[in-house]
Amino acid sequence: MSKILIIEDESAIRRVLKKIISEESDTYLVDEAEDGLEGIEKVQKEDFDLILCDIKMPKMDGMEVLEKIKKVKPEIPIVMISGHGDLELAVNTMRLGAFDYISKPPDLNRLLNTVRNALDRKELVVENKRLKKKVSKKYEMVGESDAIVHIKSIIEKVAITDARVLITGPNGTGKELVAHWLHEKSNRTKAPMIEVNCAAIPSELIESELFGHVKGSFTGANKDRAGKFEAANGGTVFLDEIGDMSLSAQAKVLRALQENKISRVGSDKDIKVDVRVVAATNKDLKKEISEGRFREDLYHRLAVILIKVPALNERREDIPLLIQFFANKISEEQGVAVKTFSKEAMDLLQQYDWTGNIRELRNVVERLLILGESEISKTDVSLFASK
Image (cartoon, rainbow, N blue to C red; front, side, top):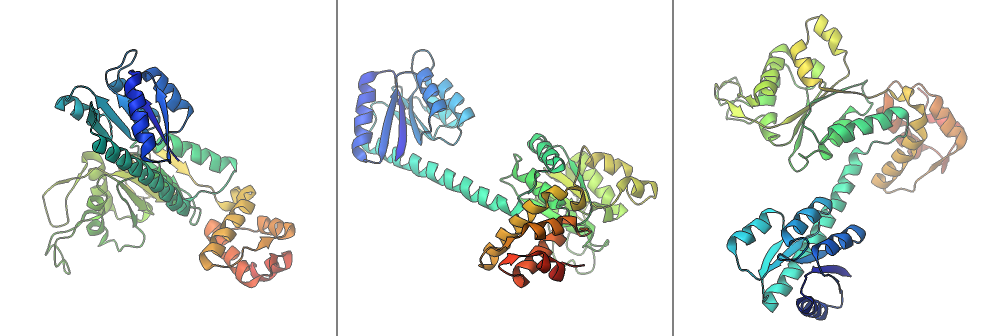
């Protein structure tokens, strides 16, 4: 059933609209509100799939109703109705987020087409949210330890800002998950998040990778090429293992952060970019600074917010949750039945020294699922999870 709310102060018009819409489909459930205040109250208490709202009403006009509903439930399509066929008014309603604008008396076909289109739009919005939530599970942060709860709390506060974040922690702890959460919960989520592994790119190519190059700027530069900063415009650049970046590239990154512009290798033309930079490293950057391998001014630009991801050995209480999460995920990926872990097996795995952190734990869980019995026992762990 699709729930539709009509907000209209004239009872005769409400009845006509309700009759027309209800007779169009038995899947339409129509409710009424006689003014804007009552309409907002109903929206706060119930979920509606579509709202038809008059503009000229006592107590609160439709434009104010539109603004207030869009703040609390922006996904609901709202069709504005007015007895004044004013083009400027129509434009203003659309600017405030209305789905459509219809003049009184409404054309029957136009009204019903608008209702169908608006409901289709709502369905698409809900489906997109569902798919986005499904995609987000790829980067789910699993854990209930104080350290993980603290990190999630910081992300909730920081993600909606454009503050730069430096994520530190040993290899395999999930620094990239933190970066993805920051992006997905930000206002930049519709734009791309571009990842750069600074440790995997030769120092002579890192500047080209980040900022692009022009044809002929170096051997092998056969055509102009955009870099990662341009590709991420409007979104996020994740500089993983930034502690391995060359000093010359660091200088260019610093300029990009200071001036919001970059220049391609071999060009003196400036290109404006709007990116949020999130960086990560397993190195002690303060030590790198003291030894002349990392720029102190860049460090302070990057480390507006610091997030330290703990080693797995520092959050052992999360290991059972992580094991179950990986067991379910691997079983789903490989199309096999989920195996359970005995309490003794769990206890033994919690005692291991996880030098490879979460990455190592995932590998061990996969090995146990493949080689272990239907219930993973302490014996299985001793045989297949040993170092």
